[in-house]
Length: 311
Ligand SMILES: NC(=O)c1ccc[n+]([C@@H]2O[C@H](COP(=O)([O-])OP(=O)(O)OC[C@H]3O[C@@H](n4cnc5c(N)ncnc54)[C@H](O)[C@@H]3O)[C@@H](O)[C@H]2O)c1
Image (cartoon, rainbow, N blue to C red; front, side, top):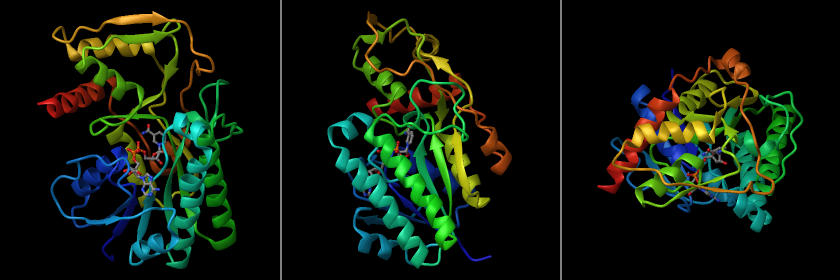
């Protein structure tokens, strides 16, 4: 079998850094190419081993074509990832997420690549509604970020129909883990506040619930979807909800008495999604996706990384 050469766009970010380490552990002979514009780089994350590091932007089709040439697979993670930023600048999220993905698909099609993996979103695709969320539900994005990811999904579907280029479109839940130091996500934010001895604000009664998935489990899902050349849309999460109150209790145990949590209460924020979690059975059936890291163990590993970074 020919040696694999995998292009990871956005490979210097949180999930990309973890994915590179995971692929290296599982198959050290695989050649890795990273294409990233450096806007959200994780420093010192790539670790040991070699990879080809290409600086560039997914909005630049010629640059994407150059980097895709010679690759056997693509995991497209590069993206404008912040909901609030997309509300402030909807054109940016369109250009990076919709246009950027179209560029990746065009380059893949013309380079003869038959399958790609694309990073989409679970939470931002649906507001408050019925749970668990699943692939059969009608997406109703309420932010330009969600809309740009939905446009991406539509192009992926169209490229399968029009050119035979198939995609595994993976809708991630709330991903947490090591190398998330720059992320605005709930758990990364909590650990940063604890380390800075800042008070933690609970909006509402703490019953708001999310689906937190540990990054190693998510990365295994990405690799399995790639290996199986899975085609279609799949939700990747933990499969169960955790309320903010439960999360804070677990975080309190993990950080221990040296890091006391100061919790303040404030009224509910307008538009805050109260509860969302994912049905992961389709991914389980298609490529044996099966997250195995419990929240306690995942929080331990994440906290250890945050503490080490401080030293
Ligand atoms: N982390 C999560 O909880 C989560 C949830 C749902 C979906 N996702 C999706 O997963 C993907 C990876 O997320 P992440 O958490 O690792 O984000 P991240 O911001 O840590 O990483 C994204 C990477 O893309 C790069 N990038 C941004 N714009 C680029 C551009 N125009 N051209 C080239 N590179 C560019 C950044 O420099 C960064 O290294 C994103 O597409 C995101 O929308 C993540």
